[in-house]
Length: 70
Image (cartoon, rainbow, N blue to C red; front, top):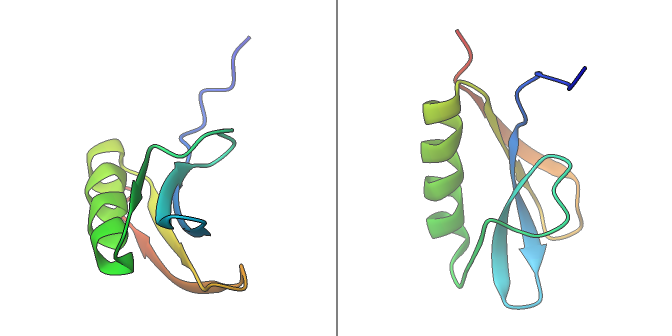
């Protein structure tokens, strides 16, 4: 049976800027030049899916989390 748990969206540092990447995904959903653009997109996706947007610092540690779960 497949895991139906909803995946959070992560904003992570990327060689081309900042990436929005779903939890467990091998490839980013989209890469942005500006971190704020990536944060806005991650929050939009998370809100639509009812999950969380987890924002990381350049070193990979968590900077902030926005929860949109019911």
